[in-house]
Image 1: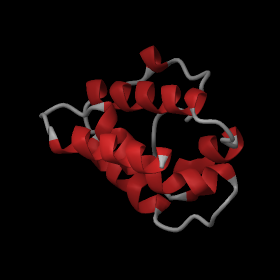
Image 2: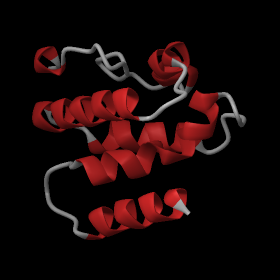
Image 3: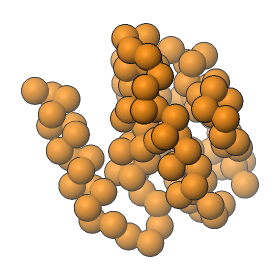
Length: 110
């Protein structure tokens, strides 16, 4: 039930689209990765979301927003394998200029 509510909240945030990237959008891109990052499922559609995130975060402000959102999510969601999270861009063949980790300094993202 909690998963359905979280998905509904994310969907509502994505529908309220603005020009700048927001945490709702970032979350919607990464949701397919949760099972993989928790070790409960295969990579599946995760890389598509990672690629979409990289495509959406073209400007420095958008990359900083994405970093901040991913950092918060990495710290708030239990059971995340941080090694898998940090390696996700490489695993998916995408260049993201920061490490997905609760310890990332997003102020240094360019």
